[in-house]
Image 1 (cartoon, rainbow, N blue to C red):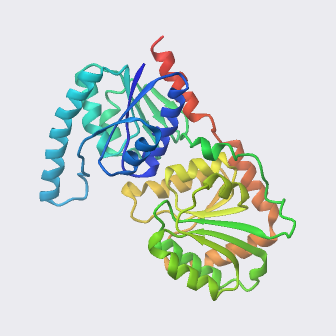
Image 2 (image 1 turned 180 degrees about the horizontal axis):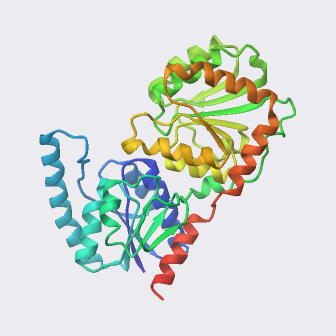
Image 3 (image 1 turned 60 degrees about the horizontal axis):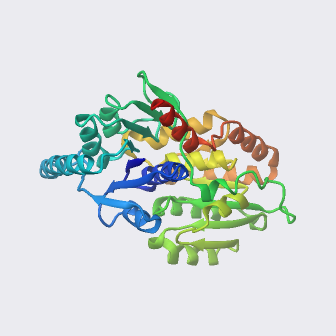
Length: 355
């Protein structure tokens, strides 16, 4: 069986598609991938040994007229390339996880009458998925209610196996020294703004002996953060990028992070209480709505990502050092709504479609 994966851009689109690809590999499927040259998905496919095909794509929304014309040109040329690829390879179906790169291959699948299945990771669907949902045999949702159309299946967001295998192996009360392990994540590329807000909040905490901090900084901010922490007297470790994220989650009692779709899914699967600072300039405010979803479940606190929130973040951290029951309750809420078998469910539903 030949399976075509279309996914690109950020890890929030690429990693769910990779989790699904690995599930299909268990059924001896042959994986083909369409993406952009020199991208995250390109690097992953090299590592996994997947056949990779390059197209060009560019975001349309929020661009000036010249950039929009380039985006249209790329769309047209990528549509022709995708038609040729699909005709030659003859996949059984195409699985797409959104991003603007998915539009040309998705439309090509429709023209060639190849079954298309799409997955939307966010509470607010992206433009490409809104268009492709009209042609998709099944629309998979990461958050319930993202689409108000027929043929939708809520499955959650697929989480990487190297994270899932660490789930359920720790609680917020296992630290013998009673310290709170605080994990701070600015996303895979870090976030200078989030880093600055968190550091200033930590400065306001007088009793620094109650915390053990692991801070993912991003490459661009690691030197400044190390300097800041040296003056703060916390037990800490700053890493540009955390390679073993599963282990980092396992050891964490509390997580401070943005509110990307994959972060939300990982927090639920790993049953971790969190303080979320949604990216203020995310498209359609999707991170704000992602964060509110987790807050409604009782698994997170949500704070605006701005300097005015520094004192509130500090007071919230201080409260949580004395209210461990609150952390436990948030963890239980996350566990209640966790969907660790999302990728398996997607594969199952696609297989059922062909029966």
